[in-house]
Structures are given as structure tokens and as C-alpha cells.
Length: 326
View 1: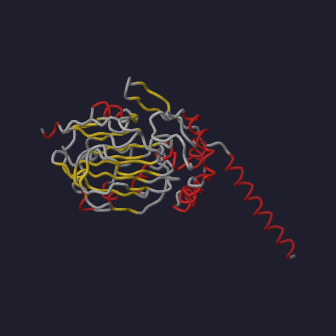
View 2: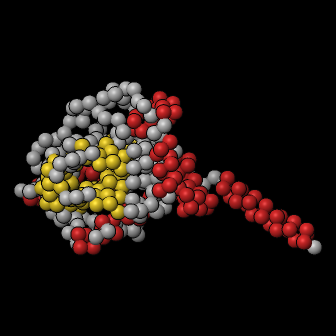
View 3: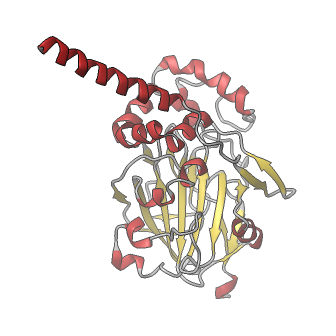
């Protein structure tokens, strides 16, 4: 009798495992490609996504979603992967990555790297990213693809039905009152991008504040399924005070497989275009928040965002000005 019961239990367990494997192997729902506007020339392009099949599976397959909840969003997984990218053996990944994504290395300071993270956090030569020096302009803090909202109190954030929650994002209900009807700019850095971030305006800084959270992907494949990611992920921010632009929030958001966010600035008074820090391996995001009527965002960015498209920008490139306050 006991043997029969044991056999039944094992039969049930094996059946459940078989079902899990079958479901896990099922192809996820086909996803539309990620399209964005190239700012120079205004062409609509399709993004080649690093780890696309993995991302689609994680966010569009029942077993993938269970894996995401249990493992992929956890700090431990991202930390372990980040450490793997610090090993000298990871050097062998660099050349195939450059070739696969056609990365232009002509502007980098170094051409030889100790490990993949050394390549990933590479510095650029001076003047490779010209900084718009006009006193009344805001520049992009990073290379990436941008979404822009002139008034977040009236705009749904990326997906209909979810509104960007400033209070949750800043983890400070009092500070969030200043930005509840302000402007929002989101610069998404893909793994193929230059991963150092810089100050968008001159100003004086407050101490850096860290908000603990998860490590969901910030890729649009993930945002289509879970739009509140920016309020769930680990993030840190500082306030940059400027006579024209008021108090500007600059935040860095972690993501799946981001080893860490490293702040390199040392002074409390900074200039536009100076380096603030860098992300170790993974796709990441920089978020800028402006108080109401403190920035006039460039129209092409607003138009593209309204149509549901990101716009590719380079660090140092103008993204808005202070024409509201002149």
C-alpha cells in the first residue's frame, strides 16, 4: 500500500514537472518590435535588443513570469552577474558584443579592457560628445532613448491606465508636491550604449538619496507588462539647484543585471556636462524631474512621445530650454 501511494505521489510530481516544462517551452505571445526616432534625420528605426528572447520570455510566459518574481528581479542575481562581468574571463565577450551591435569604438579613450565591465563603463575622448553650452539650455545627461512629458499630472506614463507616481518614485511625499504637475524626462540606456551619466545643467547639489527596490528590466518589452517598474526598482537621486531651472531632480534607476550604480562626482557645485557617475553592466535609466513651468522641452521630443515613440539622443545634446522663465 505504501509503495502504491509513493508511486502515485511521484507520478503527480513528474506530471506537474512535465506541465511546467511544456508551458515554459511554449513560445510567448509575439511582441511588436521596439521602434524609435533617430533625431538627426527624423527616421523611424527598429532597435536591436540585447537578450530580446530572454526578456520576452520573462514577461510574456507564465513560467517566465514566475522566474522573474522568484529570481530575475532580485538583487542577488544582478550582483552575481555583475561580479561575473568583473572577471578577466569576461574579456572574451567584448569583441562579439561590439560586432553584434555595431558599436563605434573610435571615440573611446581606451581600446583594451581588463574585463567586460571595464569595457561597459568605458570613457569617451574629450569633445566626442559636444556639450551645448548655452546658459539657458538643458542637455541630455546620457546616451539613450528619451520619453518627454511636459506635465505629468495630465499624462499617462507609457501605458494607458498607469500614471507616474512622483511620491512613490521619490519616496518623499513632501518633496513630491513640488513636482506633481512638473515635467518628466526619461532617458533609457540600453546595454549597447555609453553608460556614464552627466549633469544636465549647472548647479548646487543636495546629498544623494538612495531608495531600495527591485531589479526589473527597464526595456519597453518589460514596461508593456509592468509600467510601474520605475517606482519599484532600486534608484537614487539628488537635487540640482539652478537659478533658471529651479530645483531639478536627477535620478538613476537600476535594472536587471545592473551590477551597481557608481557616483563619481565629488563637489557640491557642478557644471553642465560634467560626469556624475556610471552604471555597471545592464540597461539602466536616468530620470529628470522639473518643477512646473521651469523647462520648455524641445517639441520633437514631445511629439514623438505623444505618438508612443522614444527619440535617440546623445549626452550633451540639447533637450530643452528655459524659455518659460525668460
